[in-house]
Structures are given as C-alpha cells and as structure tokens.
Image (cartoon, rainbow, N blue to C red; front, side, top):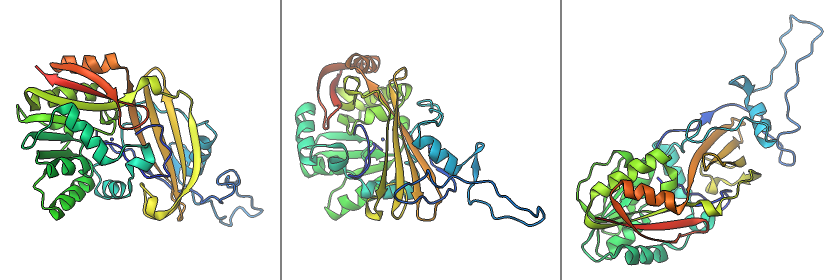
Length: 336
C-alpha cells in the first residue's frame, strides 16, 4: 500500500510488507516538556534489604524506551540504514492497515490533487477508454479504481494490506461495482498479457527499494498487452530537502494513524544522501505510556534512473509529467 496519512502528520512528500513496529514501555511525558524532565534516577536507600520502586521502563537493545525517545528528540540516536534497518510500515497487519486507510487523508496530508482530477489525468496519460482492462497497483482504499470503474473500465486492484482491500471491496459493493480487489504482494504478481493499462500512484514507486522497484516494473511490464501503457509516480530527487526534521505534536484519536486513541508523537525525517533515501520514523507515546515506534523508508529518483528501470523491463519511456503533489513526478511508458 502506498503511504497515506492524516492532516497532522509531518511528512516531506506523498507505501513491501515488512513490519517496522516495535512495542516498548516508557514514561508518559508532560505536555509542556514532554521528555526532558522525565529522565529516570537511580534508587537510593539506606536499607539495602528494602525493595525500592523502579521506573516503568523496559530495556530495548541496552536502552530504556524513555532513553530512546530522548535520544531521538535530541538527534543522538544512531541513524538507521535505509532498506536495511528500515523498510516500510506493517501494512500486512489487519489492525494497522485498517486504521491507517480509514484515517488517512491524501489531500490534506500530502497536498494531493482531488481524486477526480487525478483520474482525469490518468485517463489522458494512459489513453483509457470504456471496457479497457486496467490494473491498479497498490490500490489502497480503491478510490482510483472505483472512479475508473464508474467510467466503464474493467478494474483489478492489488494491495498487500487487508484493511485497504476490505474497505475498497465494501465501498465498491455499496456502489454496485464489480471491481476485482486482491490482497497480494505486488512483488509476487505473475499476470501475463492481461491488461491494457496499469498505474501506480501516490509516489508508490518510491515505496520500494531500488531492487524491489526493478522487480515490480518488470512484473507490471509482463502484465501488459503489447502497446499497453503504464504510469508510475515517484519522489523527485530534484525536490529533496537533505536536512533532518524533527517535530513534536499531540494527535487526536480520530486522526491517529498508528494506535487507537490520542497520543504524543515525535516525528523525524532522516535523509541519506548516499542512498538517496529517507527514513520517516514516528515515536508514539499513548496515554498508558507504552511507547511504540513505526518507520518507513522511501527512495528518491532522477528521471534517468526511472528511465533505466523501464528500459530493463522492455518498456519504452513516453515522457515525464508533474506529479499529483509537490515533489512528485509521473512517468508514462509503453510496452513494445
């Protein structure tokens, strides 16, 4: 699933199902000074035989949850290696993917265009006509597939998250649409000459490692009929901001992407110029004080790099266009 969020989530741009969620325990910080006044102190006792109360923290890799939070807030935590230490959110978890897709708001979070405008652009770029067979790769909540089905296309949507697939099926069923949604990893599809067109929106190409993106584009190429069209969106390297960003905020229950209920959240965005990748990591401190961490990695591309991916998959690059949000680009390709 391509990454999606709510209006209050801090992200630099606009979704591999490997989980990056770690459950730990930590002290619940005060609103004004969330962590700096809560550092644990060693117990002091004149009577060694008397048990002393200990802070409600759990050691994780030699550090308590609170210490990890402080290290992250002050920039002293060890930087993760993109696509090694971090891959993506736990999209395959039913609870996580269901919450995320229902609370996500593409337009307010990423500055995405409205769905109708995006679909109009896809129709033009892919030369879509009624009754064409179209594949929506990483279909999420199904908003694009549904819009195209309403215009007469025969749609298939694939996503590895049970939450998005269930929501898309429910919405389509309520609208009386026969959209074929499948819960499947995009890197496992084996369609052959099955579709007239395919697309990957929401900078979905950047949600895969470089090796994964190459594999994905090859699989999509095989799924297309001769002269079939493909549109993929990606994070534009020319728009990258190399500096690290960290922000604190309180997230209300109805806007929470990661846990049920309101919580304090530290978001950090770390860019690796060598890997041309960013790690977006969120430390979640709910009311019960049990800290959790969620992280994802995203890849930036130059146009020439994307063109090379397409060429390796026997796809001819037709052209590049502005993406559906700031910092994104779309590429249009055709199967020979």
